[in-house]
Image (tube, rainbow, N blue to C red):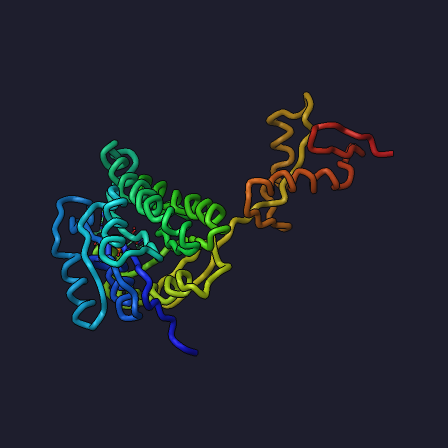
Length: 319
Ligand code: NAI
């Protein structure tokens, strides 16, 4: 199989001065792409800034024979980052929204500043970069986006209420971009990576970190953003330590209740086992799927009172 190449394409990697971002940037630089290495160069808590982080990676890519420019703006000013791509290379094809920081603190002690900064960098940052790239993607009928979630966002994690909320936001954001972009060959996917970096070095033991090289997240990202991927979009992946898995929403088939005076909290409690029963799961992928579920429920047989309920709440006695 020939290697996946990105010749002539421009890739913007945010937060590319270290960790996962650096691994993406050096990879794309080695596969023929023009790379915009964005990094604000602050601490992992989002304090300070420096040009060094991005410069080191640019130098590394160039020394290996690749093409790269640095950008030092915060992702909150995404339009400036995309402008760097257009000025330097005349185009933008692939956006890897990767920049991130942590402000971990128990919810009891969380301050507005902890919440707001996390949302600015992760949510507003991903939005601003994608928004600035979007007109170019539409015009050229090609665009690839990776957003970065986290297992903390998918499942919750102690001390990370701000980060979890901002990371799950990446999922809804990606799912919508995938839908709006489909017509224009704009593909968007979201990953929940796990990798050794300055972000994880204080919370994971060294032997585990050795098994979590940032480079091992790169191949999945490369596949998803390559021009040959024209169908995998709006998907969620967990990736790390060489393992790649796809996630999806699962819904119980649930229980339709009669919408009349009997629809009380007690009636809900009576049906609780069915509400949470996943033995006949469904895998919804759009808002209209719930209406389909209601229609399906209507087709179900009579309840123990011999009544058949339809979703408009009417009850037909079964004879
Ligand atoms: P890292 O701290 O090594 O890299 C993040 C980079 O983003 C840093 O170089 C930092 O300077 C840059 N950055 C921070 N704020 C910025 C801003 N406003 N504008 C531009 N650049 C900014 O961390 P790591 O681990 O490489 O994380 C990359 C992404 O992956 C983050 O979004 C993180 O939340 C996410 N992630 C990482 C996990 C892991 O196991 N390493 C787990 C789950 C998610």
